[in-house]
Image 1 (tube, protein in one colour):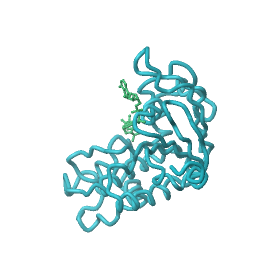
Image 2 (tube, rainbow, N blue to C red; image 1 turned 60 degrees about the vertical axis):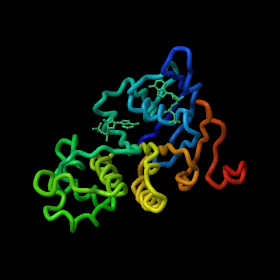
Image 3 (cartoon, helix red, strand yellow; image 1 turned 180 degrees about the vertical axis):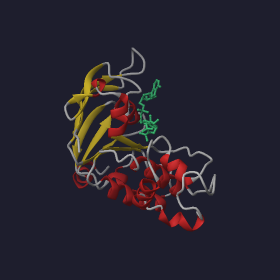
Length: 231
Ligand code: ADP
Ligand code: ADP
C-alpha cells in the first residue's frame, strides 16, 4: 500500500498557459483522498500526469518517495489501476474484456474480480460464465454493468493504488449510488485518489482537496467542507 504524492507540480499543455500551478498533496498509504473542482480546474490533467501521458514542467510525482520518472512503465502500470468515466468495451466476451491486457489472468482471477465488482448478477445471461474465449460476445450491457466490467478489469491486476477519474459521472443517480458503494468497498485497503466535480460523490473520502484554477483552495472532510462554504 504505497503513498502517492504530488510535490510542487507545475504543468501546462501550452508554453504560455500553466494549468497546474505548484500542486502539492499526499495520498497516505491505504487512505482515500479525493480532489473536487469545477470543470476545467485541471482534475483530469492530474490523472494524465500520474500515468505519464505527460511529465510536469517542474516538481515531482512520487510513489513511496520515488519519482515516477525513475519507475518503468510496466511497474507504474501494475501499481496504479484507473477507473475512467467512460470505458470502451470490446465486442467480445465479458471475460475477455475483464482479462484484456492482463497477461496470465486466468478464469479464477477474472471471476474473483467480477465478484469484487458485484458483476455476478450477470451470470444468468452468461451460459459460459466469465470464460474469456467461449460464450456470448458483444453482450448488451447497461451503463452500470459496463462500469462494473471496467472496475473488474482494473481489479484483476490487483493494483495497490486506485485512481477514480469521474468514475460515476456518466451514470444516472441511482446507478451512481450503487457503483459508488462498490467503489468504496474495493478502495478499502488500497491507496485511492478519486477525482470528481461533485462533492456528493466523494462523501466517503478521508480527505477532500478542492482544486481551483490549478491550485488547491482548501481541504477537509466532506462534513467540514459542507459546513464551511455550503458547496
Ligand atoms: P478538468 O478535468 O478539471 O475538467 P482538465 O484537466 O481536463 O480539467 O483541463 C484543464 C485545462 O486544461 C482546461 O482549461 C483544458 O481546456 C486544458 N486542456 C486539457 N487538455 C488539453 C490539451 N490536450 N491541450 C491543451 N489544453 C488542454
Ligand atoms: P493497463 O494496465 O493495460 O495499462 P489500465 O487499466 O491501467 O491498463 O488502464 C487502462 C487504459 O487507460 C490504459 O491504457 C491507460 O493508459 C489508460 N488511461 C490512463 N489514464 C487515463 C485517463 N485519465 N483516462 C482514461 N484512460 C486512461
